[in-house]
Image (cartoon, rainbow, N blue to C red; front, side, top):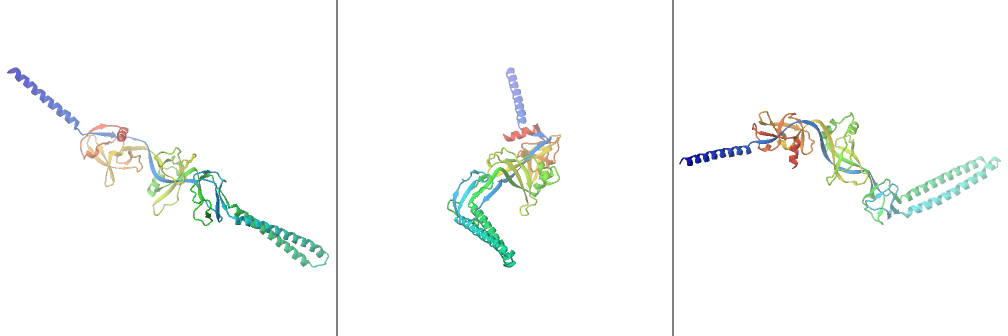
Length: 383
């Protein structure tokens, strides 16, 4: 009987030890372990995105100055043209007739001047000899001056006729890209036509127009160096352009101007950035997002997932020396990269905050912190 009792005791003892081991292991699994970071200050670059519209640096509407039928279209939509290239031809025969009439009138006026000169030459010796009065010579000279004036008027009429005739050929005033061509050969057009023949856009450089509200405008220029708006604009870092397909344009630009007033209806301030466009990839009328960087020295960075909101206020869970958590109200910079916030108040370097599982936390809960870096926390979010 004794060996059996001993074996039973040993088995019972092993069972007790096994249960304690399982209980301990179960306790380790269910412990309140949370990822925690210790806040540090560092230089951060944040990006603010604003929707914008693209325009070429020159957008010239091509309109006819005379009435007539389009007899020739020498370009295609979307084609590149150079300054002075022929675009359209307008059939207006009346202007050719005006030139011929003006030339004929000049010949008549020249003949009248020659006749008046001959009359002056004929009267002058007769006056000198006293055969006729001086009145006749003065009258002849006045007639000559009138004929010369008529000749000048005829020459001016010819120049006007030639100018009008030149309007039948329409040339590109700038180098650029042709827009749509709403009219076809044979269409009747004129100076009063509402629709332009086309538009020539110079897109060797492009403008991106965007708007910011009044508060953003104050923040925008508050950190920029310089006294005047132009000085502040000159010190701003290069801007980036995010295209409609999400890609970043290869050339960086510069914010070069801001409107001098705030729109009373929208409360917005209009700004303009210029970008080089040597290959003509971006066209007039495109939409894009302009991305402006802001560098903040000694910034306090925390992951966005470490925060929560209550009635518009932002909070985070701070861990004290006894590993007890408590919520703390924080304010952050409006500009962010979608992954972390730059804290303006509420936290300081050296503080510890919980980064994961904050929905399960409550005030004064004691946790077991698992220290990680800020980058590890953001990398875990990316996964």
